[in-house]
Amino acid sequence: MVVGEIPDSVDFLVVGGGPGGYVAALVAAQLGRKVVVVDALGEAGLGGVCVNVGCIPSKALIELADATHALSGWQSRGLNASGNVDMADFQTWKSEVVGNLNGGVKQLFKAAGIEVRQGYFRFTRKDQGALDSGDEHPPMHIKFKSCVIATGSRPTIIPNLKRDGVRIIDSTDVLALDHLPERIAVVGGGYIGVELGTALAKLGSHVTVIEAGERLLASMPSNIVAPVAKRLGELGVDVRTETTVVGDTGTQLIVKSAVAQQALDVDLVVVCVGRTPNTDDLGLEVLGVTPNDRGLLEVGADLLITPQVAAIGDIIPGPALAHKASAEAHVAAEVLSGHDASFTPLGIPAVVFSDPEIATTGLTQVEATNRGLEVTTSMFPMAASGRARTMNESAGVAQIVHTADGVIVGAQMVGPHVSELIGEMTLAIEMGGNLQDLADTIHPHPTVSETLVEAARVGLGFPIHVAPKRKRT
Image (cartoon, rainbow, N blue to C red):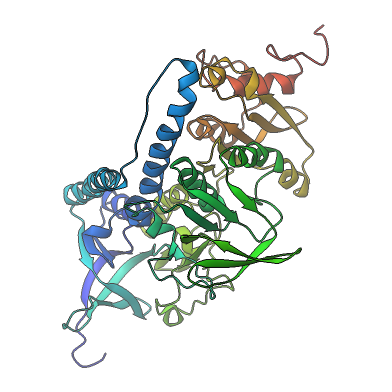
């Protein structure tokens, strides 16, 4: 032991206070463990990127954008109104929302007896690490019995578009804008770029989305993405696929496609090209652990990287989603507390808060086929939904991926409020549900949820609100 290194012994240590970390802490406390959480921002960081500068603030911005844009659409439906956006007022409201949620986690921690310490943690031994608070005091050494690493991720940087926080910003910065520039370039056509690009266009900026790949949202089925791409065009968004950024002059963004190089006049550049796992300065070599070429920590179903240490969330393989991290947190806390648990979900729902919304879970038809399953996709159009029509939203589809005998293995939806429905399909997959189960479950009318029942009936061959392909006998 280094002279002067007197470690403070803790029972259950959690590194990171985000949606994975704070849930792991609460579950461990419920299991009788004495928990200490360390976070770079201390209590102010509870909730992580998701609550403070990610999921929640972005959805608040999207709600503002949707409400603003909806006013023009309602004029032909009986509502005459005008709306002026004040981004400063929005920032005040957004801060209240974030503050309330962050405060809620603090109260939960207080009730559970969980201690929070501020600083950057780095492993120095297999069961010990140093917490550097960044002040004039020496690091605090912490010895633990069990540890969960939940350090999350950060926006990925493009070398030739380095963030300056003024003209070139990232997805975190854009959520703190107190005014909107006239011309904005969004670099990246993944879910973050599509969500922010849509919201900024609805709020009145001229938006150009630049994507290096062949199309937007490349990981999702093209028929699900098509209504979103069409809506972006209707909003006046200039979508440029198979285009890369060469550089920025300070007033113009230089982009290059297969056809030509071009200079775009833009006032603001928002870089949304993905996220980088925070595994590069944790001292993992002390644990005998090396991240893979993507910076991720490989784990099994028990989520352990050593017998005493588990890793969850954005730093392990799988979609970088807050709810995945929270689900993994339960397993990690239980495994480290001696319980039999494993992370083996059949479906992890994913949502793009685009216009219209996209929601998926389980397997796509291509993924199922690649796994050797013989599957069919049954679809029902949103245009045939009475509830969607009352919202003036007819674009989209609900589709179910199922085996020949009707077992549901996946679902993909695009349409109004489908983010609220995909949990039902995830439950169906986890329970081994089939088309008949879904078709026999009475859904309320008129709701968008009825499209799932109708899609199931399409798969059974006897839909009600679209023409059946055969007659019943």
